[in-house]
Image (cartoon, rainbow, N blue to C red; front, side, top):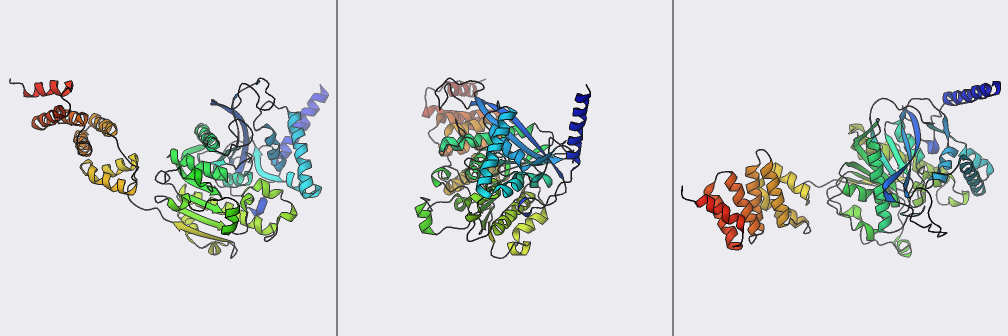
Length: 514
């Protein structure tokens, strides 16, 4: 009994001492912690709407055992009370071992961490590895969240990237009042991402899953939502923004270099502010050797998004992953030193914060920061450039854009507006059924009868041989008690389709002699 009590006392003392340990103000790459303490949670959950494992193991062929749903190991950084066990960088590395297998025991996780320590030591030396993995981070594990609700940032790693890939970014943003949520860049059926459309869909749906998860967090404000990502994740998040209008801002670290995929994104459905930070440019011959198609860039075809394109000259593609940058071999740094690359990473993270403050929190001071030259913000000269392309005004050639324009200008302007939008994008087409359904929806709204008539008239002008649209127009006029116009519409419908029983019955009623 005494031993148990003593062990309990020592454990409690250790946790308390850990909780009271001072948090360093300066983190990796010279990042300065914000005014808020940071909490970190690791949540192991499944997306039961999707399978991850088939009936047979893809390696051994043996029957699959255990849960087959898609595992989403979720890491969350959030504003918190300054209490709880301290987190070291090794704690983040340890999570890699359970990213697609939640059944692993603590001993197995410890063994995986030991193997990681050995690998890191072989790369950068034992002393440096001990310093990297032993780094005291800003976060405290499972700390109580601060009161209030904070904007949400969903982060998507690149191919093979872990959920902690941008732990420094997560901690930094959380210290400035954001909730950051990430999971591994997981393939459709295996740990590694599939480099194809299925892989894009898998990560995009992971982003959607995390958005839904954030909705249930009491401290998360999903009405102020941004997505960020590196490389493949920086492309998948654009696909997510195309489909989910709740996303208010985009951040990409050197992503969207796959035009065979990004050409599928409608430039009229990505309308949110976008910060794109890229590595130093390659010469044309290098791009050709890498097989990169330079004939198309999604960034250049977007017309209705406020786009900030930033170049960080000291950085190469992999440098945007803090997890990779931490353990780069000394010989990796050539033209730019480690200090210069880390400084560029520092400013990358700083610009992400200011961009989110400007677009998600609507801070005027952050907008002014973005509009200044980098050197005027303290960025070393010749390190970075930034260029803004302002969003064009005018309605979007989409159903939603058309509806918004009709609300502002009036439904009687539908024909002219439709021609204007089709001139911008010939693929924007409304079918007879689209217009007919729209007209009936308007007719069911209080005070929407005149707009319904205008919509049906637009439809009969666009599809003059549609007996159904003339029939619907007749019904709308009938509801308005405009008998003459209703009779004319029903007669035209019958001319186009003499077998239209509805028009015949309604016309007989309207023309019957009392």
